Amino acid sequence: MKKIINLFVLGLIVAGFSSCLKDDSIIGPDAPGATKNIIEFLNPDHIASGTSSTYPLYIKNFDIKPTGSAVVEVAYSGVDVAPEDIAVKVDLAPDAITKYNSDNTKAYTPLPTTLYSLTSLNLVIPKGQRTASFTINVKPDQFDLNAAYALGFKISSASTGVISGNFGTIVVALGAKNKYDGIYTLDQTSPMVDATSAALVGYYPIEQELRTTGASSVTEYDGRYAANNYAHPIKNGTSTSSYGNFSPIFNMDDAGNVVSVTNYFGQGTNSSGRSARLNPAGVNKFTVNGDTKVLQVSYIMVQNGVDRTFFYEKWTYKAAR
Image (tube, rainbow, N blue to C red; front, top):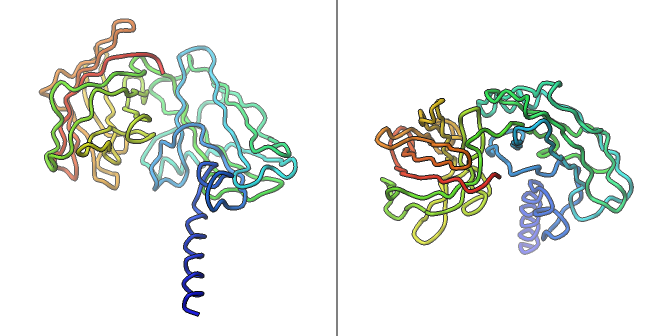
């Protein structure tokens, strides 16, 4: 009897874990212990929001051209393919933007209707298939680079399947790439120093991205080494790691001087208590001459009000992303 009870408890634990899962990589046909199918948005990009956010945020940046587009997919995720044609209705959800701003202390505003159009939001996942999609068509050359635009989307109904509670509503931030945006080779000009642990050292040279966050600001994006996320890779002994809740945002003036460094995850408001600040002893200059772009910057990761990690870096442009 005791053995039966133990097996029953174990089954409840496994079931509890499975209810939180997402996408083919976790609950799909190749996943162990795959669950029944649900209707959800697939990730249009890497998730840019933290785990405390009610709705996931994705960021799509476009070259400054007259037109650009982003595809958003809806999936019948899980073990089976669609047993029949599944009608899925998607609606714009401006309230999701408001909630995201409240959860994350952000200031996204709905993209003006004059700057975008949508293909039909009445989708059909064909029998035997898994996905359907719609397209956001935008006019990046008319974007205000100082604005933080976004669109919220919600799956409002589906003729078959259960709508996901975690990925049934999403927020997609939409912006144009500024002149600093791109793929860079990141190297150090002096060794990184972590005041709390000699085992934590710099990981250089590596390839990283700088992604637009405003007219004259960019943030570091990894997606290669430590995490598919906004992160700064480091080494913990011989292992690759990164600081959680930390990615520097570099803010430049009109002359390319780095006037401040902040943390993408908030200035001390994240669960790690981490913020960033400029080290005024550095060169702190972003030089742009055509496709020759070099950022030399020194900055500090601050944790719970105390200077913890000191970075001395040179970013050299490689290519557009």
